[in-house]
Length: 84
Image (cartoon, rainbow, N blue to C red):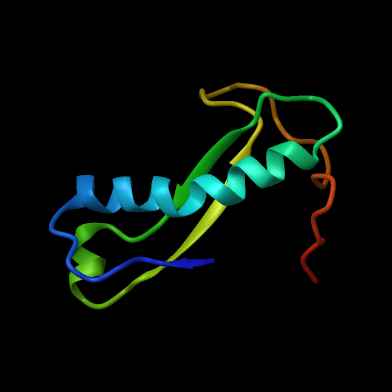
């Protein structure tokens, strides 16, 4: 989980901030995988409407495809912890 900074003005600013915040984690996660890449970082965060209401939490995720109907992950990524 990451926290968005104050002062973002629109959805484009939020998207840029999310990519920057999540890039290091996505690169680290991808480097841990023995094979099966490429993988794609996919940050999930609030819209500008929710950001304006004070929501700053966002999540960094990794996907096996960058298109709809693409390749799916079939198990946990190497080095990840399964959620309870």
